[in-house]
Each structure stands twice: as structure tokens, then as C-alpha cells.
Image (cartoon, rainbow, N blue to C red; front, top):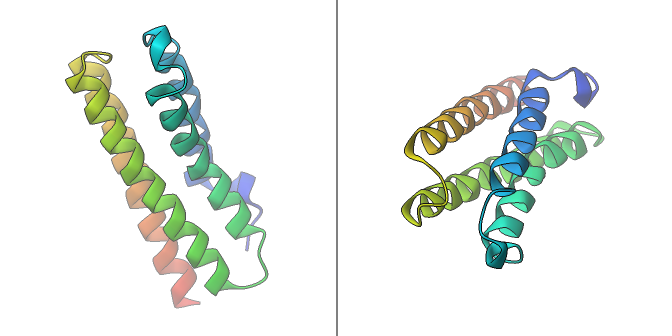
Length: 118
């Protein structure tokens, strides 16, 4: 395996974390320990699990951690939709973030296929 910091999906996930921190910084103060915390944790989970899986000894473990990262993508997407519905995010922000998540999700699926084929 290549080091995680060379994986494009990890780099894209790091960029997403930065964007999530930026947009949630504008959420209402009362959401600091609610939706803001949940979204930031889900976003951080994506590159963290990719990195942890890449650092494991075998492809089975890497695949498992990629699955967890995939689940965090789905969790974050749900939280973005909720944020839009609560009008914490504008429509264009939600669309952009979900588009990035979709790209990351597809990249994870591709990486899982590649890992499983070796």
C-alpha cells in the first residue's frame, strides 16, 4: 500500500473537513454541541479511517476501515440535508458539499475494488 497521504481520496477528504469546519463555524451558537459537533466528527472520520486502514497490515483490515469511512460519508450527507432543512446551510452550499461527498464516496468504492482485487 502507498502511504495514506499519497491517496487522492484522503486529500479530497481533508479538503472536505476544512470546508465543513468553515460552514459550521457560521451555525447558531446553540448548535455547537449538537449538529456542529456531529458534522465535524463525521467529516474527520472519513480521512482518519482511510489513514488508519492504509496503515494496517492487510487488505482485509484496510477494506474494513474504508467501509467505515464510507459510512461516515453517508452520515455526513444526512447531517448536511438536515442543516439545509433547518436553513443553517444555503441550497448551493448543501449541493456543493453533497457533490464533494459523492465524489469521495465513489473514490472510496473504487479504492475498495482495487484493494480487494489484489
